[in-house]
Amino acid sequence: MFATKFLLFSALATAQALPELQFGGTALFGQEAGPNVEFFGGIPFAEPPTGALRLRPPMLKPRLNATSFDASQYGKACIQPQADPSTVSEDCLTINVHRPKGAKSSSKLPVFFWTYGGAFILGSSSTYNGSEIVERSVQRGTPIIFVNFNYRLGPLGFPQGQEAETRKSLNLGILDQMAALERVRANIGAFGGNKDKVTIFGESAGAMMTGILYLNPEIERLARGASGSPNSAPAFPAHRNEPAWHNFVRNVPSCSSLAASAETLPCLRNATSEEIATAVLRSVVLRDLVSNLIWTPTLDPNSNSVYSDLASRLYSKGRSARIPFIAGTNLDEGTYFASHDELSDQALKDNLATISSPRSGSPDQLGTAIDRALALYPDVPAVGSPYGTGDELFGFPRSYKRHASIRRSISYAIALWWRLTFICALSGDLIFNAPRRLLSHFAANTGIQSYGYLFTHPQPDPSRGGKFINSYMFCR
Image 1: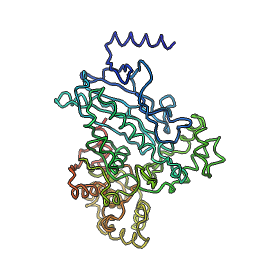
Image 2: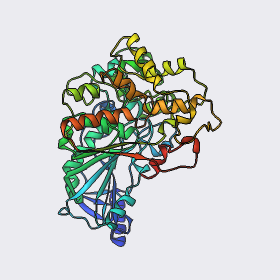
Image 3: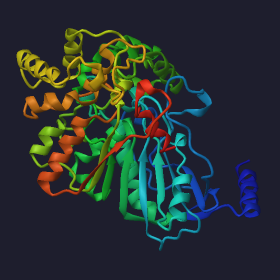
Image 4: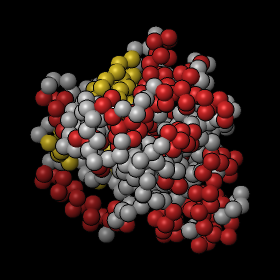
């Protein structure tokens, strides 16, 4: 059967002159993705993270161990809620390459390495087709190669709790990202790329992951530049969301009795993929993604971890990648996170206290910092966000525009009052001013080239102003 399928595919490749290249002893067959673009996708970069490898750091897959490989399609997405079961799998760690037609190993083209977003529980590389970016790069005479990949999501990619910390199983999705970068460095030359000219970038959760990578000097070996939202990832310890982990395990029938124990990971590695997929569906809640992110990166005190401490502390120690970066914000992005309910001053204070992490001072110090910060944001709709819209409230309560302004910038104000001894872990998956400015200050003090932007392209809903989600459309 396999021989018959291979012969049929080979005949098809010959008839249509499909793109082909040699990759570590394997013939890859891709497809044309535009007049000047070739696509090779669904290429495994790590062993399937199933069974004994489930909930462990990725194990690199240096070779495909096959004479030929059909790379004409994207691989399946990682397990996530509300997805067609036929489109997702635990065996999802694959990488994709869009390159200019006819690129050779001698081309040495720069590489864009993209990480998708989705609140750390949704998304896949197939959502973002890089063919248009590559096509445009060819047309303007500056050809590039576009690479993206899948990483584990939800409980499988971002386990929570003390046991995961003790067993060194935190932030697996970010380790998937690093593993994909390792494979790019090792193999992109075969596609015509330059391993020394890799720029990492992403949006939303993907940008946060890129920001975490930026906190590791080791990334200088894998990338020469970055673009995204350095430092804006949540910064809570793993035990904060212990109850969510217990709930996930309770939804795995063969492990439910161990949910509150410190022996859940060994049991989960023996569970079936069907049990795991069902548990993800039942325990990962899509509502309130903005205000209640749970399955996220966590601080990891283990030695050599990818997210060992707060960005502000790492910067003060000089521990960060010394590579150029681009970081910016989008006008009125706070509107996406602002409450549509009337909020009193006390409700705003409670909200800000909840998203401040970790507690580097006493409750009184935090309260004083929040009071001072709130004083910078008067309850005057005309000066709130969406900016430049006067007293218009768009049918929402008076507090809406004030809250939108605060959610966009308040963390920076609080950080200043606390002399940058901590960075607020924001509840939304967007780029805020505080993290960008913190990194920019670090760059200015250390001679790193940095560039900023403000995205202001309009969108149809005036109550959102220059809503950040609109910028995503320019990446698709």
